Length: 348
Figure: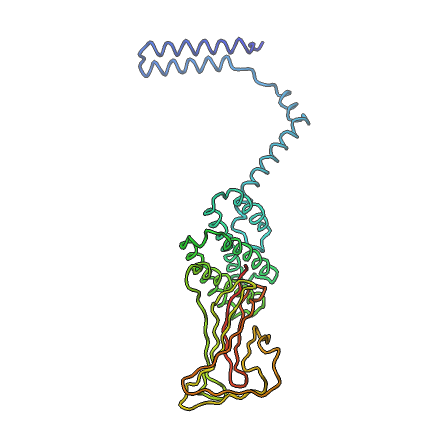
């Protein structure tokens, strides 16, 4: 007959306590300690706990009620592992990967939720913009960029960049601005090099957006300084003694902002020069080849003369285009020559 479980437990406890007490009260030699240890082990073997019968073990294995519990446990462990491993793996994914939505829709959203201060917000927005450029760079290097991916990256970059530049205190942190500007310049250089091999319009759009972003950063860092204008000059196509100049007050404008433009002709020769015109319009300008400066001209012959060293100017006021981008203004002294400057339009 098998021993009763409580009685066996009591015997073991009593024996254990008895031997422990003996060991504490008596200084035993190594041989004596070994003897007592063997004696206790022998006692435990002779009075072992009752084992389950083979029938009971087989019954548990075949019990359908126990299998769902095991399955649920295994499934829970798999889900937990996936919840930990997938976001980690997704962090290095690119837009052509199935894990990319986890990177942008889960990881980055969680990160955004734990951004509290203005400085943390600025750093995270900068990182988001640079992450999109890093992804574009890696895709271009392995020739995996598609037009749709490119458009998506440009859109997401513009969103993060606009949010970053809208931060009121960003202009005060010159370190963040300078670092961001340097990174944009590095990516622009890399993408322009790639553009020499691949002339797709979408890649050109990526480069243009980067240049606009750099101009916006430069404008922000120069907000409290003197506005930087831009000037271009070229010798007249009809008379090398005439120098044609076009000048704008600034190189970066916000959408809809007023642009003041000056077109000039200077006599750099040694004799007086005469300028003849077929209408009342003597100078004009265009933005991206759209003529804006001579829409209403009197139908009458006009002319003027310039002595050596003198200069004649025409002033125009227009509005910056409503869409951010890089634009070209071409100024012309009608019939005598023209030259161009570029300017950048950023979001207001």
